[in-house]
Length: 280
Image (cartoon, rainbow, N blue to C red; front, side, top):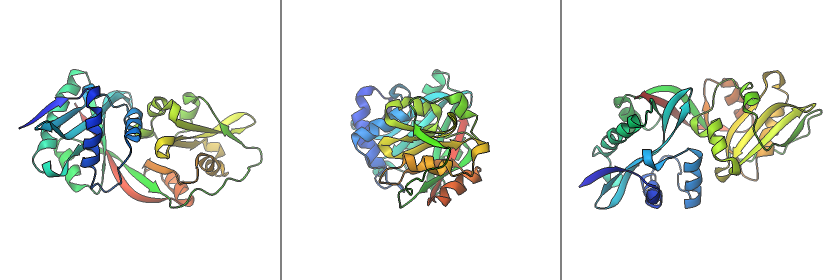
């Protein structure tokens, strides 16, 4: 008999195993080490006490991993991963587990539920729409088969490591806002596992980039408007890159200049995701 319950810290090893099985046939390679999984859920702010799983005969067969925090000024739960192992799909498990976890989220005064889903995942998109989620943005996932070209020196521009982000200054550079996984709060959650690079003109910071090292993924890269089209962003991107290409996830497709920048640096859109929200 299938039953549902909230998670605890002691469930995390079983959650990892269930995660790998549930995503074994996913359109994106989601296989990762246990350490990488722990780093991922730390970045996303996953809290076991507001996350839930389904069990059958003592085995975890499905899960909702949730984080919670302010999102655009509203107390929000973030679905950091939902999965059902293959042999239990099509049996209403995800829908029933969703109803179970939503009640818990309401109890802790969460006002909305946020998630991302591949636009090509018709079954999941249809389910979320039926559950009351609506699309807010289309987010691009970009990849490059080659590392970014080595940087060249730019006269008058200093590129160097920075220890602590200045969010008030950095926010003044933004044209939009990053996804949950790339947000300022996510950057702070992985302070020991990220690299921050700043660009300076006469000791004035005019741009920055942040990479999450465990997954080699770019979290943020922005240059002040008046300093764009000078090669600064490309220089920061090169400084953040290693021998393997950075992963670029969840770029708002309405930011056409940003998408064009990555394409000019050898990246291509390989997938798209809907960012979706449901009021609770």
